[in-house]
Image (cartoon, rainbow, N blue to C red):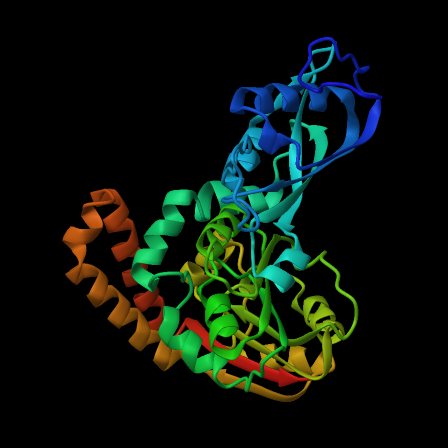
Length: 387
């Protein structure tokens, strides 16, 4: 049918649609029209139904001059927030919401134009009682918008993992990357390591992270960088890629969250091309039973930690060879000390943007890590292996 989706005269039966598909539509509507249309679409959808849409974000694609341009080039966070906050009710008073399954750059635009401004989303209508699981914890507790910015201030611009740019350069330089190779970054954070690999080695990097907030930041930082980097919200334990897709799989301080590491490592092995390499930095623990205090910390954080030898053995059991499992705890201690000293030195600058409570949280967190690490309980390792 030919119809105006913003018209109140358009009537579609509630709970009658399995899939709503939209391409380059919302960017021509006002903010109010977008919000009103989303409310209507959620009502039209069956429970379990999907909404897929794709929009131009940040800026105009291409450089053609236009006398008139009615397009709203919004940040992707606008669409994500509006869809996430939309709720509908049925005649019995039951509440429904949209659950984000994924959103990502359109890969063809990244490969051809090195542009991340073409973005698509996939949502599913679910009962509002669903809690969102681990993703919800990441975005609402550990990696809230303000929390990511706080971490970036201590790790360095573009980074939310140990050592920031310094350890990234050291570890990446061990991979002997070549121009044109394809890299998968698992738990990419806000993208600093991806930009480094893409710009220095001319690789194509695919960054995935379960945290919506992390990917929103990564896309924002990628905008205008002219780098061959694409991003996607994805769960690495359920995500699939064709066999022999990547030359390198890279992951920094992420896999500590994964309970079934062996299954994930088997997936890595399949996704890598023959001769491809995996590089992982991660927390591990000392052999034997941890203290009650450290065991409580592991449980509270939801970590799955092993000793360095067991970690390396899991990579071997997944099929990898030439496995390197290095205890880098001494380096971890040194990095933590340097990060804390620099952060405390720049206290006034930090407090100009954040609160005293924010400052205390970071300082106390780093001191606690130093204490656990100095006691020999919390350890840090580097793992490299070849398919």
